[in-house]
Image 1 (tube, helix red, strand yellow):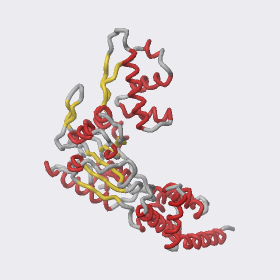
Image 2 (cartoon, helix red, strand yellow):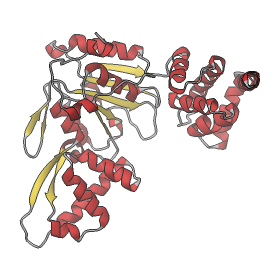
Image 3 (tube, helix red, strand yellow):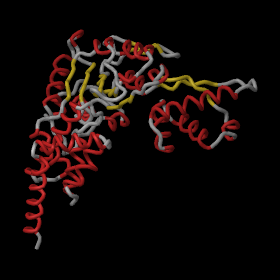
Image 4 (cartoon, helix red, strand yellow):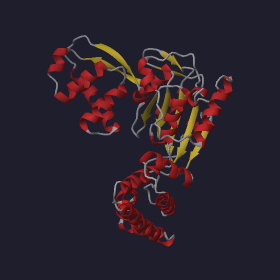
Length: 373
């Protein structure tokens, strides 16, 4: 029996071909963490224990600490389709439940601007609002929040222009939350602590009850028994607030996601990048940790995490200077403010890490010269 099958929650469930494609497939570079093992065992153990069931999880930690990777790994372990929704400050209830939208006649459609035609045609070919947002984000190069606003503007315009008295057909388009909730997917809810509207949070709170339901304009839907919500939030991140207490209360298991140990950091980078210089990676890992702690201590809002480590190590593996790429892959990602950069440089210097990096780079070049015919 494979590792994934050990944790499958509903092995008798038959997924559609489309749903099977949504179940995350672990790449060969994936390293199983203690958090992944702990959550998988806890959820599996309690899955059929009624009120003790664990189906709402909170992963709270720094950017780049592996929250989304862990959510996807749980999809693979549990055998559940994975999907996500990224929250933003001005979310309204339609972003939570979906919206009833008019079906525009082909005659009116032809008179619209190309961007509006693209929206409506994409909408009619979809079964939910998220795919429309993704199409707009890709086509127009805009953020999810901007895409949601664009959709609302176009819909308002369509409603305002319909003053010729013609009968209008309407259709309900569910949100990605509703789709996951109704069909029993693993849904990652990213950054709900940025939402400003209390009514939106109340709707989310109600849905996350183990025996919860969502009131749609067309019907009341019940929570699918396989539905799992994984809430992922950043700590001390610009624009975030403490997670709503009612929402936190509905969580049955929480993980505090910090940077992994130095050994695991190095192991993950080796697996992902193929860069095998353990001594160099050890110095890079120490520098990432020092930069992260220094940024926190001095209220610098940027983050030094695993993502920076991956790209920095990969750049060095590709022949880039370790010292130069330190700035482009790590420090400038934290801040470009001159005074803050000085604080970060001073911290690295005081720990002797800049000197160690120089020595490791010289040694790396010597080894390269020795191996070059």
